Amino acid sequence: MIIIGELINGMYKDVAKAIANREEDVIQRLAADQAAEGANFLDVNTGPYSKSPKEDMKWLVESIQKKVDIPLALDSTKLDVIEEGLKLVKRRAIINSTNADDDKMDKVFMLAKKYNAQAIGLTMDKSGVPNNKDKRLELAAKILAKSIDYGLKAEDIYLDPIVLPVNVAQTQGAEVLESIREFRLLSDPMPNTVIGLSNVSQGTNLRSLVNRTFLVMAIANGLTAAIMDPLDKELVDASITAELILNKHIYCDSFLNAYRKR
Ligand code: THG
Figure 1 (spheres, protein in one colour):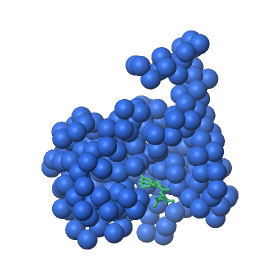
Figure 2 (figure 1 turned 90 degrees about the vertical axis):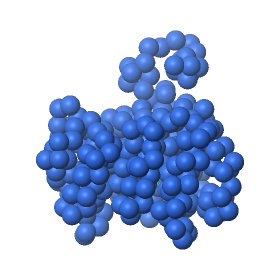
Figure 3 (figure 1 turned 60 degrees about the horizontal axis):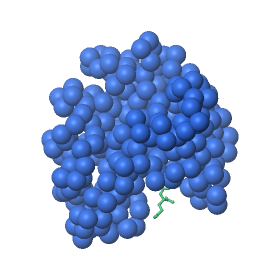
């Protein structure tokens, strides 16, 4: 599974402070630690408190790339902020994200073409996040069809069914899991599927347990990528074990270590 490290996000108070005060060492430590624990990409989000998100995105991308050689998922609702990052990335990036609105998709897929990037497609539109899997599937099909119009490959699209917190949207867990299972059937080769895992546990106690349980269930339904905390060792262990049981790796007694060494 593709791990997209979630920790460089201005949603976290300490990260917001590090961005505001240009504390490069704080960001670089978060980048190096996530990479060391197996992140394949790092999500980069300037957060809700950023006063100059374009400048902040530029600074974040430069700071991270000085320290680690890892591809980035540029996370912003503003496309000029994402483009600021795309201009600087050394490795093939993920644009996080478009929704299913035509005008937004046009802009995002144009950027993806121009910078040879991959893109996350959120299965939501102007009317919000669907409350059932059929509507999510309809929007996913719309996103994939549009991406093909732009000459993108299905493998370069990550469909995101949008995970909601279990404490306020308890019916949505099962809808998301079924969505993941069905998104795979939309094309051959299949698109990637991604979730913002930690959304599920926001506002709950036992966050790590809720995240871990949901991730294993999502993997069982075919999830191929997750925006998650790579420093949560039990979470990463559970994902490796889930994929072992699905026969994605060969069993040996030290399978966790063996997988990490790869
Ligand atoms: N889909 C896509 N991108 C996303 C999301 C998604 N990007 C953002 C988010 N969702 C995924 N990343 C996070 C990062 C942090 C948290 C949740 C999701 C989180 N933060 C603590 C909280 O809110 O409780 C912050 C606590 C603190 O201040 O320290 O849970 O779904 N494509």
